[in-house]
Structure formats: C-alpha cells, structure tokens
Amino acid sequence: MVLFKKKGDIRRYLDRKKQQEHQVGFVPTMGALHQGHISLVESCRSDNSITVCSIFVNPTQFNDPKDFEKYPVTIDRDIYMLEAAGCDVLFLPAMEEIYPGGIRPGEKFDLGYLETILEGKYRPGHFQGVCMVMKRLLEIVDPDNLYLGQKDYQQCMVIKKLINDNFTGMATIVCPIIREPDGLAMSSRNMRLNEEERKKAPAIYSVLQSLKKNLRKGNLQQLKTDANNSLTKLGFKVDYIEIANASTLLPVTEWDGKQELVTLVAAFLNEVRLIDNLLLN
Ligand code: AMP
Image (cartoon, rainbow, N blue to C red):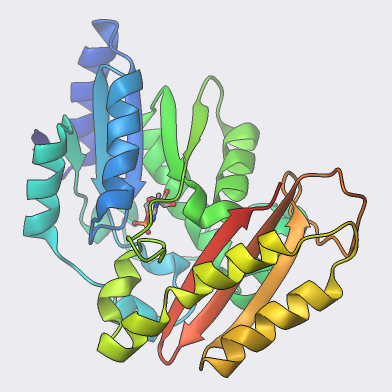
C-alpha cells in the first residue's frame, strides 16, 4: 500500500495510473476502522484495479465539538487493517491539505429537504460539512467508482446529489450494513460505549426488526410510537425513529402496502449517539 499525505502527490500518482487504463475506486472514511469499512474496501477491490481509501476526521461535519474531540483515532491499526485488506493507496491528509488557511465559510450546497429531515434536522450543518469535505476529496481522487455504506442512509442520498450536481462519470455503490454478531451495526463510535451501554446497544436493531415484523398496510403511527417507547424504556434518548419512502426519505404515515420503505433511527446511550436503519419490504 502506498501512503500519500499531499494532494498533489496522490493526484500525480493516480493520473499516471489512469493513463495506464486503471479503474479507480474510492472509499472515504474517518478512520477508527472496523469490518464495515473493510467490507467497502473489499467491494471496491472486486470492481476496480486500484482501491484508494482516505482517512480524514472532518471537523466541519461535527455539529457537536465534543463529539469531534472524542472521535476515536487508531491510525496505526487502521493502516495495518487496510494493508491486510489489500488496499492499494491510502490518502492521509493533514487539516491544511483539505482546508488550506483554516476552516472558512465556503460554498453553500443546495440539498433541499434532505437537509431539514432526520439527520439534517437533528445535526444542523452536518451535511454541509459532509459535502464540503466530500467535494474536496472527490476533486483530489477523481474516482470512477465511489463506495459508501448503507449505514449512513441519508448521507448516501446527500452524496449522490452532490455528485449529480458537480461531477460526471462517477458511479456510487452503496454497500450493506455490517453488524456485530448481536446485531449492533458496526460503528467507530461503538468504541466509546462502556460495558453496560454496549450490552444495551443491540436493542436498536431488535426494535427495527420487530417494527419490520409488525408492518401492516395502513397507518404507521402506532408502530413508530411502540418502537420509540421500547427504546426509551431501555434508557435510550431517541432523536427520531421514522418510517420513510426508501427512495425519497420522505416520511410515510399511511402505507399502501406497495411503496418501498426504510425505517431509520437515531438514539443516544448517554453521550454516544447511534444510528441505524433497515429496509422494510
Ligand atoms: P465513517 O468512517 O463513519 O465516515 O464511514 C466511512 C464509510 O463507511 C461510510 O460510507 C459509512 O457509511 C461506511 N460504514 C460505516 N459503518 C458501516 C457498517 N457498519 N457497514 C457498512 N458500511 C459502514
């Protein structure tokens, strides 16, 4: 694996590879890697001749500064995992490479309603920060294929819009959620759970599964209320538990029994905010 810290260097390297007809796939991450990230690297490797991964903890997407300060950093282990997974190129930029001259208010991205619902509503400014970093990373790496995880369902939609509005000839591949054996969606933030919280955390997935099992045509409000109550009783502070149209993410209250649905949840266990989602039909 070749490691680059400077955008000029990685760009020159990838330009040479493209001249040699290589197809480049890209897996952007914030590090503290787990098997979920590695599954993206594996998909990328099976479709492309060059797999590029980036690790950059992007300050502009943290609406809560405490969350940024506490974001886990495990860089030596990450490099080892990427090597073992067969990643070809790691881009590890310093802050100055991505935000030269510091963080300044930049371009405003038009994300429409995606910015005012679910994660957009509960994490103001989050998706503007995601777009800010993703646009810069995509300009630097200029991949043929971009690999994202369904774990961040709404983020996938936001990034697809960013690509649609700003890039051509770049495909997006959304990879399934990788879970721990007890059902908890893998996440870098899981490292911050204490023993007791870690035991409770898989309840999120159980609640999503029982919502799926009880899904019936008609009004969906009771299902959402029951799911919310189950999590609250267990000690979660629920930001939202929603049932939405799987393609638009707009909330669905009356289900016709046909349209494709996804249920999405965000809930705190004390300080740690967890998200998850499940396709329902
Ligand atoms: P992050 O490092 O949290 O920014 O995540 C980097 C990429 O990995 C994003 O596209 C995430 O959606 C994806 N990802 C994170 N957790 C998982 C998971 N459990 N399964 C699959 N993909 C994941």
